[in-house]
Image (cartoon, rainbow, N blue to C red; front, side, top):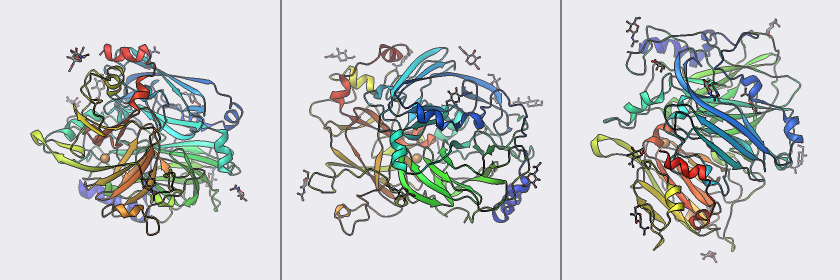
Length: 601
Ligand SMILES: *[C@@H]1O[C@H](CO)[C@@H](O)[C@H](O)[C@H]1NC(C)=O
Ligand SMILES: *[C@@H]1O[C@H](CO)[C@@H](O)[C@H](O)[C@H]1NC(C)=O
Ligand SMILES: *[C@@H]1O[C@H](CO)[C@@H](O)[C@H](O)[C@H]1NC(C)=O
Ligand SMILES: *[C@@H]1O[C@H](CO)[C@@H](O)[C@H](O)[C@H]1NC(C)=O
Ligand SMILES: *[C@@H]1O[C@H](CO)[C@@H](O)[C@H](O)[C@H]1NC(C)=O
Ligand SMILES: *[C@@H]1O[C@H](CO)[C@@H](O)[C@H](O)[C@H]1NC(C)=O
Ligand SMILES: *[C@@H]1O[C@H](CO)[C@@H](O)[C@H](O)[C@H]1NC(C)=O
Ligand SMILES: *[C@@H]1O[C@H](CO)[C@@H](O)[C@H](O)[C@H]1NC(C)=O
Ligand SMILES: *[C@@H]1O[C@H](CO)[C@@H](O)[C@H](O)[C@H]1NC(C)=O
Ligand SMILES: [Cu+2]
């Protein structure tokens, strides 16, 4: 079996013969199965409409979440949990200043939530969507809840949403969000004719719980399940071989294979495109490129950047980049879009997986020929699990907060040690310092802290301490508006972790793939830290045995999870909570529908 995989992969990676192995593309005019979202239509944006509808308004989206049986995004049939019966999830759009309403109907037989990744939720932390932290989840069998999210005037760019309950994201509950803004158009100083969302994700061919049970079980030393496949726009054509295929639960499962296809993305040669790339995966970092096209990066996680020209871009799960697609030099009319997993980020092999997968950039609608374009040189991935060098990204139009006297030091600095440790019953769990997270049962951190501030088991208000460590909830408490906080994240694990902070973006002052942070890095001159225009984003990968320093300002009342965005790692406890301005958020008026979610558990 191993040999078989080698026979395919070696010529594929080295000589680029993958092309010969690629199966059907989407034939124009063919009928879509009802569970497939038409991404060509839904992920292409009518910018004319959004340019002229800038006055603040309400935007309503209706999500009916249910289990759909026998769907096959890449050919292998399975069940999924889907929004409005389609995969992947629909695009949500709004302008800065709008109010987004997400009306959720939960027809699953288990609870769910929706988290809008990267939004600030000003004065609405309770609508962040993190289960057991910002809310009790929406019950199954017909439970309903409406998220109301006011989008800040100074928030725009590319985001995404996903279930923040258990491993549901991996089973299909996710989709893109685009926030348009007049202000962004001014900052960018570049024009484009069309906006296209490209969503790429790793993919498991069975329900995530099947893999989770083994991952969290005894004697598994943080060996994450390696994806079976990768999708672009929710689609791929998997090379299924019944003789070599290894089923997720050890072969008792009978596989049904349906014809599938790789995505065709239609473009026009005389137009300029802004591509909004999202890594909506559960685990895998990937490298993304389009043959013979340079990518001019202009946005990272909703922050505009100085233009950065790249042949390919690496991105961790949950990260987004916008780039202007520069027209190709050649005369071909179709080109491969390539995504490759960095297999050095995997702890084991999955013989089912082909780590390079494709879509087609097609300039002549109606032609079904496969591309003959050549890949940019690719070194097969760095021999380490390393993300894009963050120091290449420079924020446009915003600078790092410093002390009034110009000092680069923060008001508060917190050391976080990241590790995986084997505890009771031989179970391996993710730790921040000495704490591993377990979700509260029948309650949420916000419910406890906001509605019962003087009498809860999570935090005592007198004396006020920076850290609270109760009931498996690790809180960092910040009570002073305007404080500058640095988190110094030391990764003692061999794997890279893409950390995400809710409710904020943070400045990535430095990331280093070896060594230790030194206090004197704050002193200007010899400093490897950037205090001018480092990138301001919501997800950053800290390499194995490396470290990073990120900065944010205490200005958004709420409870904000800070966690590794690898779904397996979050479920194994690599999560803490920033409890920010509790006095202020406790005075908010919490909706009765929100309070009722905890009562109805
Ligand atoms: C596609 O996206 C728009 C948002 O631009 C949304 O309103 C619409 O309902 C979506 N269509 C489908 C079929 O989901
Ligand atoms: C899908 O769901 C159906 C109905 O609940 C069940 O009978 C079937 O075994 C499931 N299939 C898989 C592959 O889990
Ligand atoms: C929700 O979606 C499921 C599956 O598509 C469908 O059977 C059900 O009727 C929908 N419910 C409502 C209220 O639209
Ligand atoms: C805007 O772009 C034009 C053309 O690329 C350039 O000449 C000009 O300096 C830019 N303006 C600013 C404010 O960056
Ligand atoms: C798989 O298919 C075979 C042959 O149809 C059948 O005997 C067996 O029970 C099936 N196994 C499962 C787990 O459904
Ligand atoms: C499709 O594109 C190929 C390559 O550019 C070209 O040789 C062929 O003539 C085209 N076919 C049609 C039907 O346009
Ligand atoms: C600058 O201000 C900070 C905070 O007020 C203070 O801790 C620090 O000592 C000051 N540094 C200098 C050089 O004055
Ligand atoms: C949570 O609520 C359920 C349903 O009301 C109840 O059965 C269960 O005992 C509760 N668990 C805890 C730990 O309170
Ligand atoms: C604190 O909470 C416990 C358990 O809910 C309750 O029994 C007790 O009366 C409360 N104490 C005060 C002072 O509210
Ligand atoms: Cu992680």
